Length: 359
Image (tube, rainbow, N blue to C red; front, side, top):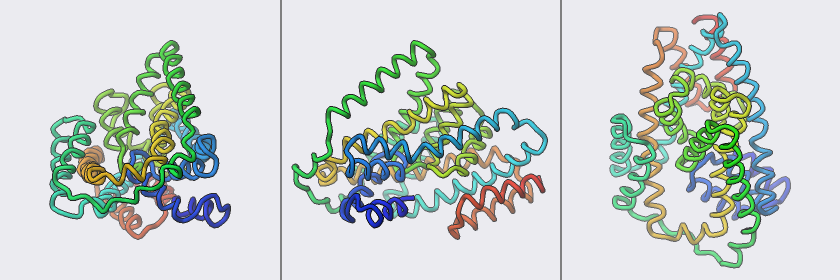
């Protein structure tokens, strides 16, 4: 997705140059949230200010939301039918393969020495012991600051260039709208406020991209709130992988299963809101931020911890699958396809067909 955004924004429309785009990637990889949709917002910010960022953000996420909403409605109505159960039994195996592949790719990028491996292992053990992943992530940032050496600092940048698109008035207006919406939600339905708060917190801590949200979402939705079982949550992840959007679009599925259409809308807006605000508020001062000797250490520690958290999610999901020979073969085939970079939009439908036939 990021490569396609680069092609559109630099080569086709000349919205920004290569240097700006690379700065945007560095920013979006350093803050929590799904990288691709944040890059869309960054391009909009550079080319059209806060209004452009909002337009890009909504435009990028809307198709995935609509498709996921349709899938959620169909799932809630027909998941108990004969054949549908077999389909999702197979898709859950593919979800396990997806998480295992995410651990491999995430670990290859973020566990490069003994210190980061220690943080990953400690994070997995603490999560297994019932410690909140939010506390684990915060602790990993502190530990990273102590254990790691700083990367070379980025350029400081010119203040005049940094604040070009920092439209404070519009940002304040958006914050006021968000607060007013939360108050209105509370007056209508307190559960919607709780749902929004959960999704806001998840996105606020999901460093490292969309997959980093899965341990946090599993903890809050399955373990803490008990809104659904691990198996149902895995079904939501599988459906999300069929949509042309980030994996955090699973929030739409969760919201619909908890509070119907209103829940789907609220959960989707909430899961993307912190990412948007961080892009538009941090982008103007990011060069100064990454020149800090502690910034890269904290980020590296947090990213290492998510490898451990994903390991816990892998174990949790694997235990929920009734493994047999067919499921093992399907899981290994899915993993091999993912490692060979086969598009997920081919893997999931193929797995669905095989599930209906053999499971």
